[in-house]
Image (cartoon, rainbow, N blue to C red):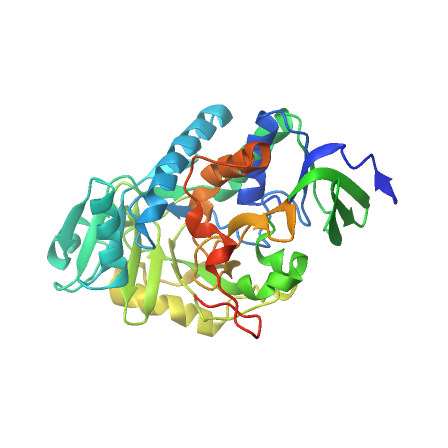
Length: 391
């Protein structure tokens, strides 16, 4: 099929990307009566981008910045509402541990979030952490924040639940249809794919690692990075069960690691933020797990989780799409106000998909939202003469 598919106002909104953010936005927009088209280059709930991996951490204590906490509170509410709508469990509460040392980024940031927002939490030292969660091997001088509301989401199921809600409300989702180009004009936007050209009043770009190709003049603000996750064989599996093993973030001299209880598939799942700091092209991502990748993960496992220091059962590659300051970008295009930019999320965005969907629906239908997203505006990223961004 070639040519224009309908008139430019056939759709109210076109969304590029049917990952966590795109499907959530589609659901909320369609539920408000918007005529929505979603274009996805791969399949629904695919493993090519940033919204897969069986489990994703959700934390209410947020070391990255306390300003995220109100958004997280609403995200929890919306995930529960989505569970009720879908009739399946999508969010598992285990509690969360933010582990580090006094003065460190993770411990101090988490404690600050808890104090500023009056979150229930406990401060525990290494000895108490070992006694309470015996899968850990940790020194006495370690400090940790335990927050009982944290846990994990099932990302593929969350995406499908939002997609089912969206299509039930009238949205159209087209998979296997990459966007070649888009253009804004006085009447809205036109989006070109191999199948044809679609028109709409507004456009939402939520394409994750592919954002740089859609916004080449902003590509320096959206840097895809290779991540590798591993699942390691466990000797005493009961110690890694969700009831006994909270999700965690652990700051070490080697970097910041994160991990999960055993769920869905065998093994202790662990990853490291900014794994090997490999900037990549999304369509050329190396998805194999090499010896160097396993070594990065096994360093944490062997030192701090010896009962899970078995063979590597499986591994998965995904991508972070990082902004210069590692905070989100949610804003209108400065030269094309009919275009909404909803990425990058810098490796910590999935837990927010439910509330970001609501925010996008607010901005598209009312051009305002009650949620505070001032920290995510493009104007915070000052430009140098060479076009790169300051933090």
